[in-house]
Length: 340
Picture 1 (cartoon, rainbow, N blue to C red):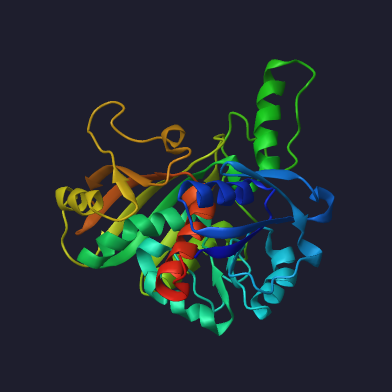
Picture 2: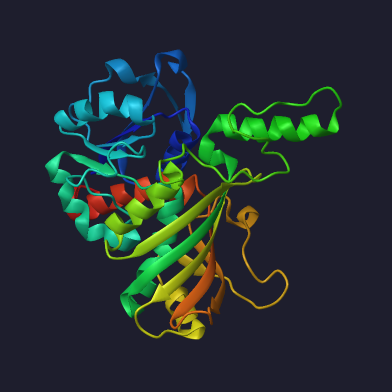
């Protein structure tokens, strides 16, 4: 016996990935509903070997459905997630709306799956920000061994993190550079993204940080440990898919880079590819379509007493969004609902 599963926002990048990953991982689905806005009503979407037509999110009745994966943004989530939850359907939400609500669990299954039972507070589970998700997967096993004091992270985030509009803008600007008279002015991003990097993701806050940077701080504390100090600089780069992070970690206890490698090699969700030779590391291109959080460039930081630096890469549409949501559904199935 399987589950009745809803994917809300099924025509978007993340919603499509949710459907793909549910099929790839053979999640026990008895019935699937792909929901979208009225303007996309009837659009055909692939689900494994099947094709399903989208239904109207606005009029959908969630009664009798087990799990709803939401990828519709905060405004729509604010309207429809409570309706689904009230109807007895457990919501796994990919937006930022519920991440900072202390009554709602913020889950990365490799890190804090034991908090899944908090869903009972509101029948809602939050999915973290894409840049946070991959980082805490890398940090968790190291934290368990040597207790992390402080993290300094610089991110190199792909345009797919800004949705289809971000992908289109990079593509069109890149073409426009080579065709005189067809230059494309920035609209989705504050500056040209083609052949450039932009040190701003989301809006600026009063302290000079951006909201994306604040998210990484707040979410790491909620998911992993409130005592960890985190400072982040988040940068948009001209890459279509795949977020990269340069992470510097200060520990309470001594740990050397060889032991860190050994720990990461065995860590759930992590794939260590770290050869100290040209090309002996992972770049975003190699991570596209993959499940793992890849770690490379593990090395000692001699400027502090117990320091390690590393390079972390993951497919942001997968681990950073859709995959993590499906993994949460799998934890629900194994620990809570137990139908499959």
